Image (cartoon, rainbow, N blue to C red; front, side):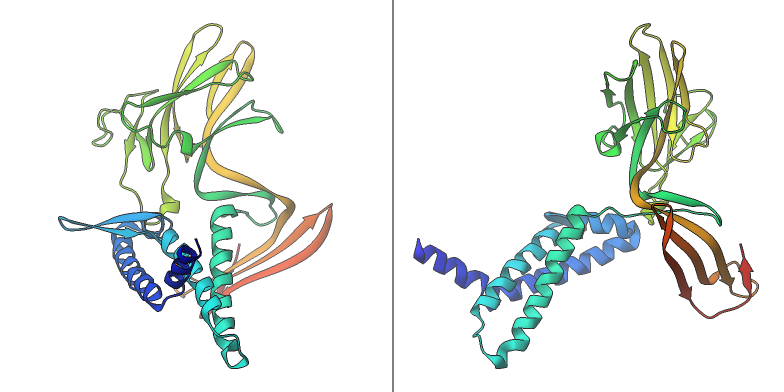
Length: 323
């Protein structure tokens, strides 16, 4: 057993392993950057840098590579091996500190990857909110149209694989109906039946959902999905199309109670309220291209203003437009 552990230690602390990892990381970054040109940052991150492994297509040639997740995990192991191998002396303190710093960054990035949620909060002046929205994740939200009513959520990871004729039915003992989801498209738009796009997608209420090519900036993608709502008592079915930019949700009735069903970005609550006092934007003369922003906000917790933020992004300034 000691020989085996010795062999493992020699491998993970060797310069050869470090060189191999650096070479693999070089090719991964190269291929991922080239892929990003045509497919955008989000898809490149998912395929090359957040994956266990990746198959890169170079024409007819398939090149298997470890993904960024695997490589960085191995780098962490190699750094620990290197720190154990380095002779402990004052003249080697810089090497140990450098290794430890990179290891801390790797660990913190791993924690961020697994446990953080990212999104945005959209506010107009004098508005406030205690929740922010995801950039890429969506939910089907089902509930009564009343303030504070409980929402039943179907995360997009449970239906974004439903392309073509695939369907999946979702049930809840708290709801008087079942919801069948089908024909998910990650980027689409409702169009009239005679539109040149839309293919053979079913027509519901005078519209069909047309699929669009994914945007390079994945935040711009607006998904769409078909739903069929079946009442548990009467068996009556209501069909509908949910779209991420719908102004009004789909409304269904069960008995004397109305429910709304909508497709919305995933929302996260925060333990405070953010109030936007004022927003100032600079624009380059004669254009609508922004050159600087200023936002004055208050963080309100327990009905008290705890922190006042002034966010500024400055570029060469021009005339100020107050919103």
